[in-house]
Length: 135
Ligand code: FES
Image 1: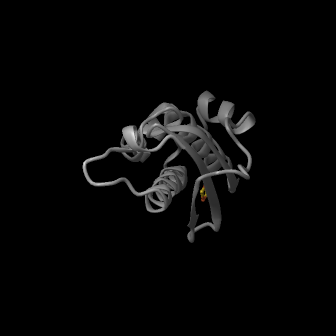
Image 2: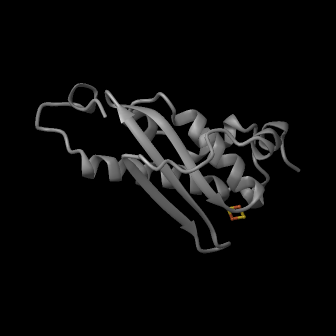
């Protein structure tokens, strides 16, 4: 039912845990199943220097949260914002159809965390995150 990649990320989730000194966080819950994910970020020179998360959910939610964090780490905020559910699913070598919605959690919480960061640390006109904030 699950690909080897999904099982690998479910058994040994990458970047899991809280981040007491996070600069930003984003939370998403899926009302259809009650699962929930919080993503924490640290940003330096406009790039995601550190990312972690707490996830309450199924194997698919855990694996997609883990893979989302792997895909986002080291990316610029714009690049991370552009990560899609399809990117996460394809990096996991697919998800069973009834588990596709689990991937929405990771991408949704990542985007919410980036939005939270941008709200807390707005750039000045003419600047970009890459040249304005060092975290
Ligand atoms: Fe809801 Fe997986 S069953 S996130």
